[in-house]
Image (cartoon, rainbow, N blue to C red):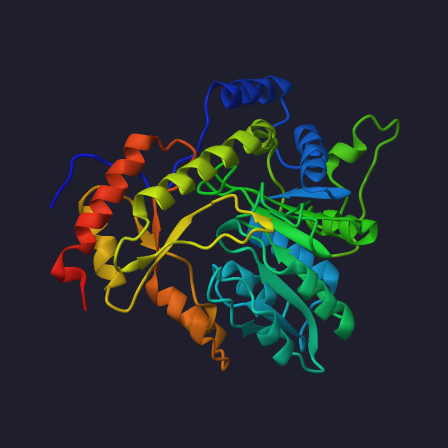
Length: 381
């Protein structure tokens, strides 16, 4: 059944404020990476997430890589990684030469199962990477206790969790370091971009050096009374965010409370409209965390063909997709770990439209289309 109406799976919320911020950067003449607008954004973002330091990066993958580098992951090490995640998490571990060892996840919210992580610790384990699945934080009190007990570090993959909180503490402040994404489908966005945050000055200083080819960024030499010629003593990377992106991110950060509120209202609207619908289970939100709703993931039960539902919704103009990945089954890793809960979520979860621009009529339409699709015997097993 074709529909002329379209409800996008994801959509950024941008407008005149972002355009005006871009005009100011264009007028300044500094558009490239790690400039004065980036420096200002970094201070504002650190304050927002409750850390002493923030480093604006090209994307979340580069932030994760920098974090793992400064935490000391290297060849021969093992890093325990939450399995249900976009593979950038596991890839970043591989970029250091370490081996990702995937831990199964909680069946309710998809974050790392602490007992499963504990069972994977060996003499080669150096750290744990937790993932805030579509924004809802993992169990950080238990994870920090586990890491401390075994002398490990803990990294928060907060790619989706700007605006989230755990027991009153903001996402980003919950582990030794945290990495955020500002990709176009995230809660706040500059199209691409990311950030690394933390409180350890030595680690964050090293990360800043690595992220600019192994030297201090050019903005630090502005105003020097002598010719400053940097010396390269390490092979770093170009992981910088441009000042153009940083200008957008400053506006997006100011919008963050309103954007989270709008997404939360949409999630509440779905919960009201889809309550009791046969064949699906709605997302679980734990009482001690704030969910920023980067995505709205529904779980199909055993009577429903998830793939058929997604394709039918798309035919009706409703944006939909699978949730995220069970990393351990991806061929690149050659993993020997079994993660049955993650594998089941990978096979059964699907996303409905979620962004801050949804209105009640959109929610009505999506709910109506999903009900109709689920009533079709063609999507039933």
